[in-house]
Length: 273
Image (cartoon, rainbow, N blue to C red):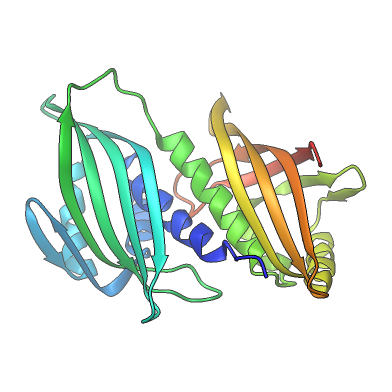
């Protein structure tokens, strides 16, 4: 049987949402969306000290007012544990410009622990952040658009890989006029049609695993982005047969920054092999 990548997609959804929270100013809605990523007994430890609990952490977010922040992830290592938790190590480059003009470019190491659930997104229980190096600051390059788009991508994959028949779960991440061109013979533009397609998938496929690569995001217009991504795909049928495919996706994404996720306006899939 092939391995499932569902947990990895769920974890990466939360990681990119966490980072993305800092990459645009904290409105009340964006603050609430970030706090919803955390377990009630959340603990974060940084070189400045430890903060225990969601309410105490919420007060610390005022420190980021007026900052410009960008992230570039180098590596994410996801390790499910026997106690039902997920251990995740992250290496990334952080670039922060403070209100007073001070400019820091640092390598961060995150050691994190998340809760796990087969059908819900995991929550951060512990984060230990250390500084692993410093660099001369380059010209600032925003990362908000990429982080926002990848959070959407991994959440979409998580929902697909649950192999359920509920198209309504996707409603949050689809525009009212969405169109999914999944193959030359499959175009979906309503939630009912999506539910029917998911039902056919669930009837035939036991496990579906996606391995995204070559992700690129460009800005098309104000709050409109294009995401391109290549997939290596593996499927395991209910008859215990292995299937594989390679595809390229081109997404058009619409964004309202106070929403939990950006939304998919269109998907075009080609390159089936």
